[in-house]
Structure formats: structure tokens, C-alpha cells
Length: 83
Image 1 (cartoon, rainbow, N blue to C red):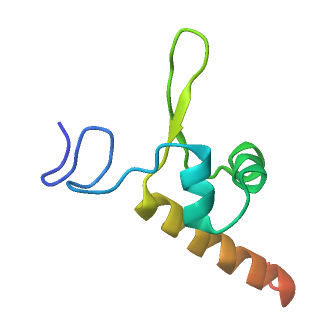
Image 2 (image 1 turned 45 degrees about the vertical axis):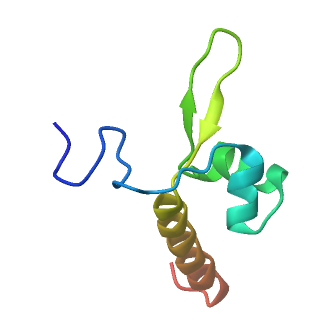
């Protein structure tokens, strides 16, 4: 059972869901190709509904925000030579 206030999928009650690569990219203020690359190589938190032929993607802004914050810290640490 999900914790109080959460939905079974991990989203918070009332949380807006980004329902396409275009929406995810617009939210992150980058191109669709960039978010697809981040998902493939850097584990951007994107979820999928699997269908018979193709899966549709969705993401939650709070997960994207946390991922971007962690990525920014990693990039900054590499920039100043701290690892």
C-alpha cells in the first residue's frame, strides 16, 4: 500500500503528470533529443505505459526537479575537479 498522500505509482496527490517527450522537454527547457538521451544514458526518471506496439512515456515534475538538481551538483563538482 502506498504511503498516505501518495498514489500507487509514486506520484503525489494532485501532481501534474508530463505525458509526452515534448512536455518533458519543455518542462526541462531542453530539446526532445536531449531528454531522450538523458533517459537512455543518465537515467532521467521517465516512466512508460507499455502498449501492444509502442509505449507512451510520462514523468512527474518533482522527479525531474530532483534529478536535475542532482545532475547540476554532479556537473559542478566535475567542473571544479571534486569527485
